[in-house]
Image (cartoon, rainbow, N blue to C red; front, side, top):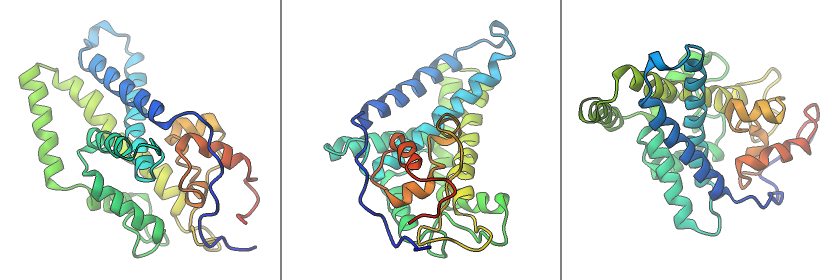
Length: 252
């Protein structure tokens, strides 16, 4: 087996514009939030609440995927300012994260995947999901974000009159669940140390989910070897890249 030393030529992505998809995710996130925050629990069947929370979690995950692709310049590749603006908006809505700081840390992750210099990695040999996840959150979460979220929460509750239960169920819970979803499918599973050691310099693996399940779990972020091999591919092009590679075949 020949180890891949770095990203090869990026396959040509489909013509669907990333900015349009980013706009659709952003608009869906905003509309679903407005609708969910205004709902009365008694007026909606009980079975609908978990589905709405799951939808809000998935759309919240989509915000980070937009920001992530913007860091690679694939949201609006011909319009760098628009690309950066959409990325900053998405990651701001996601968790009040500073876009430039996150982009810098993500480039470190690509230069030093699954190593001591990788800000997203924590001893994949000895630590399980819990400790690694807490380190991951602790690295990126700062007091300004905590205070900012508290301010927004109180403004919505006391200034706008949104129900505290609705805020917790449809804003706070999906945001927290999204961090676990992103970390588990996009960082922990792809970069944990496999039996026999890492196969190549990417130190990454991909899941074997079909395109539909891959989209539902993490917007195809689980096709992670392909992302490290071709970081210039947007999220919606990763299934095609994955299909060109047999799951059983080692990267060449």
